[in-house]
Length: 142
Image (cartoon, rainbow, N blue to C red; front, top):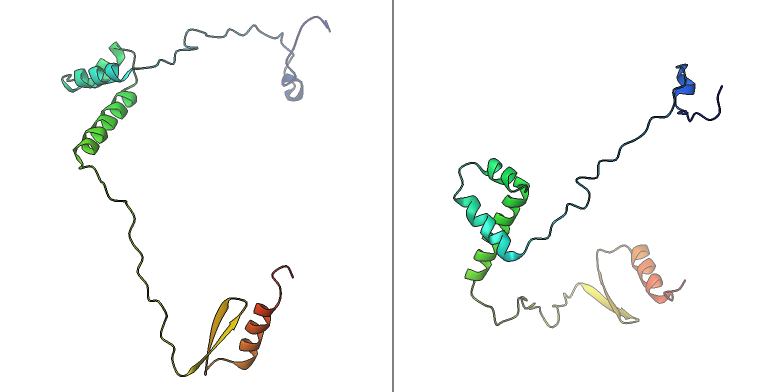
């Protein structure tokens, strides 16, 4: 076997005779083809596209993807709708309104431990209430 000939390693497992490695041709015509479009160019193309009957042919003639044209048209539609909205001077937050202190029922006991308030009702199991109180009394690191 001639060691100067480069062969592919994949052919050795299949039992097929080894073939010399063929030259690979890299197609570089499309490399670096990404273009940057200005807003004016996008607007002009979308306006021209709207007057066109065959959008696929229009896109082919200008070497643009039809999906890109539709995306630009959708973005223009969103921008026009956003421009129609009145400006908002007030903040976009909804105020939260709650009771200052919740009403305390007469059938429960309120316990405050380390800043936490626990209300234990008469129907609560004693072992559960003891476990909760013990948990609140232990330091957070343990």
